[in-house]
Length: 404
Image (cartoon, rainbow, N blue to C red; front, side):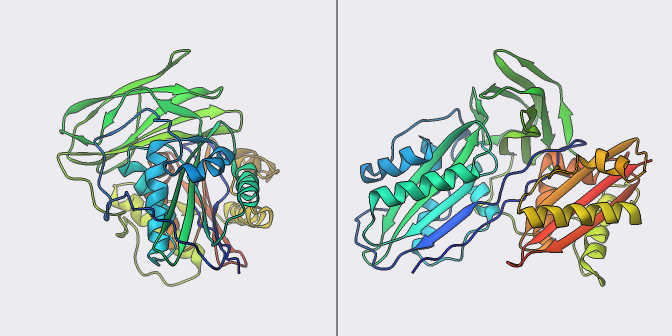
């Protein structure tokens, strides 16, 4: 019997522009009759943080019997192999399907700076090598956006069940020097990266332990991207590299590190500013949360605009109907859609998300540097909120921000 499930990563608009967004792709399959493969787990439980986020460490499959599957996916990467092993061990132990936030947490803890990870798992007995490789190639073909495909692979067994796991990313850029994941407050952090695709408008956005994200002076040259900033407070820091590629503005790399505090042992599932009980429809809940979040930072609340609501809902419906998370699904970017409706914004932006719950959507928006920037942009005065659900129960969300 075969079991297919999808895990989603929230992909969101960049401040204050629009970004193409990846499909939600974690595919899980199961076949009966697993054979015994004596593979020992190599991943600590809970996760242990590495010393630094590093340039890529290209590596073959840890288990030579899976090299064919790795080659069907892309270039092997040591950090991604470790994350794949973690995912496989969780599934083998019967743990619930990992939340994408947990997969991203695993990437960051292992020093991998890539964004928008995708995971494919297979529970199987006797594997037909050609059939499995064909499935993997088909998965990669429909999930890749641009850049190089980098992958991690793991096969684990407990003697009764066997799990094969792949973790894939699109490598649009690579770090050129390591960034320690434990820093001292006040340290100047150097961010150096090499682009792997044609890109422009590179910008490093840094989110400190509190408040709004900050744009850091960033240089882009044929030799790479360079930026320096000070981690001037104790706590969690996230540095996110944005750039405009052939598919528009989007994040390329992200590094999470901790100043004068130890990194957490698990992904943070605690509430973020704005959350709480709200009576009313989903749109009212999300509007209330985002305005509470703004108030917590001393910003004025956004006015709900019925015309922006209509545009946001139409876009949420279009994304759901096409099963495509994006700012432009054929009807223009946010500002173009607003203008086409007869409005004249002087500033516009958008956050979009697909998630299993509204809370998860709001939390991920808040924790991402470029997306918190939209939530806390002081120039926005009005907002439209559109929310729909699909047949699998996923929530499709569009927050359309504007100032007139």
